[in-house]
Amino acid sequence: MGIHLRRLNNKGISPVIATVILVAVAIAIAIAVAFWMTGIIGLFTRFEKIEITYIYAEKQSGDGWKIYLKVTNTGTADATIDNIFINGKPYNSYTSDSDTIAISYSGTGTFSGSYSLAAGESVEFEITIPEGVGFTAGQSVEVKVHTASGQEYPKLTNLP
View (cartoon, rainbow, N blue to C red):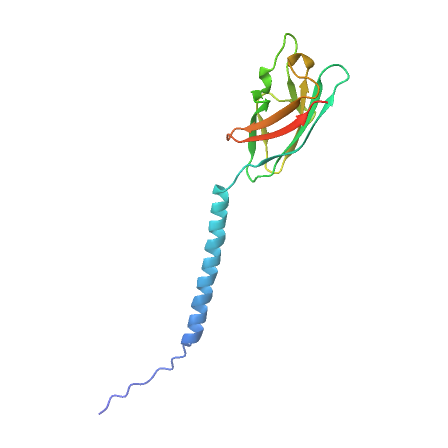
């Protein structure tokens, strides 16, 4: 008496279709991981980049000058401007008996040693230089913006 093995009706998927499905799943997972890693890398590669869009000086009707300075943060991280140097010295070190250099920004506030500049944001600084602090007409003036991260961004202008 012979034992007959009855063959079950196996209707699985073919090896070719199985391979295509496995490759498609692997590609989908690879794309998801790539997007995830790009997001993580983007967090660690943020940077500040300050650009001085323009700088110019005007003689005031009384005595002294005004220097107008537009600063733009073109980087991907926020920047904090922690000092402004004029000819290599901090702006607040220029004093005389009655005058000192004053800096205001965008017509709304007084710069007092810190200004936070968000990524993509611009601000215009107005630097008031009285004649009594040692500047003369025709003199070159270097204005250097210093950030909390230690970066410096210089620009030159001449006093009229």
